[in-house]
Length: 488
Image (tube, rainbow, N blue to C red):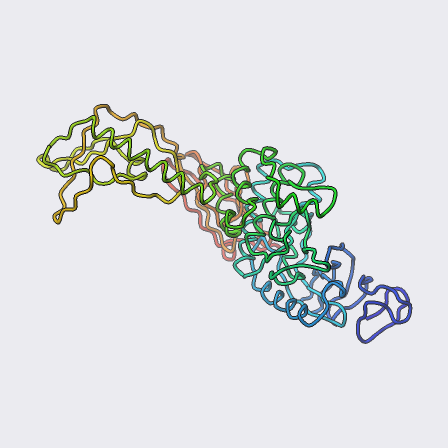
């Protein structure tokens, strides 16, 4: 390595130049590392090292080169953890994750080469203030999708923040620097017992110095989404220690966030890991209906959800029992009604003609009000007034005929849908409005013609005109590798 100050050349890299004592952890343009990477420009410095734009002589392209400060990871155990993290991270392949090429060590320096992504970080984008909620939701789904890919590779980011999330020129978000230079998630603590990471984005378990898993990343992503929507992090005090205490003790100020984001943030920023989303994939599934304007399940915490299921089940049983008492059955010799539950009470329908005129029709009484949408486990609640009598020969149950015709509920289903299947993947816009990145759920659209545009950084924009029919689904399948035109 050549010293950028005096030009002295040493066979092995050192932290200091043996001739002039200059700091060799900051590489000058022209420096060649590992006989492969020629440093061309300094890009910035993070908590664990410096990042450079470099030319990879093997791949024959420019890459981002992260050089770790030697003093931050010494010893054989740090070396083992570093190589293990690099091996795992190389398995991550996703459009929303920056690709990692290689990693190694030369003397006192450890380096990682990765995809060079031209663009800006979310921290830079936030300098102009909070982002529109539509943009926040689009970025949130992309970040959660990328985080899901990282978690599937058994990697925990542990330092997710706006500085580590970058948006390229096409508007695609990338997760950067996902945990490569961090110790393994088994008591991540630094010198003096302080937890490693950025205090404003650390989960409560990280603040305690406890092991961090995928649910810790979910918490950090919740902090990022809150910051994108409000322009500030939920917790920040005068000192790092005071900030960590706020993560441990204070409830997040959800009232400052836009209404559509509050249910997701309430669960992502839960103090207890068990009450959060299990990983990035589960958080992405919760964010998609919010982004697409579809109904979403209430953000119940698991214990509360179970209590609500029991309460609503009892209420449904009381309604069914009351209707059975008030309305006499058609035949007195009929067996008692089957046990009621939240599900069959909510799905009760009006009487329908029986295919056999002589056979009694099974008619379920309609409740006075529609039951709320509860996405919790349904517990069967037996009707308290009539015990269930087992019968060896099943017979058709006869219920009471409703005395009033049920009021038809207004339909909320969309007029039609568009399903886009693009390979390898594509960003989808419909009528000039971005709808996200494939794979996507069906997009609700009014009937009629619509303009669809698929974009991918490796191919020319791919437009298509589609016609949506009421109640139908238009499936648009595109393989850009065969149908697209590669960019020159």
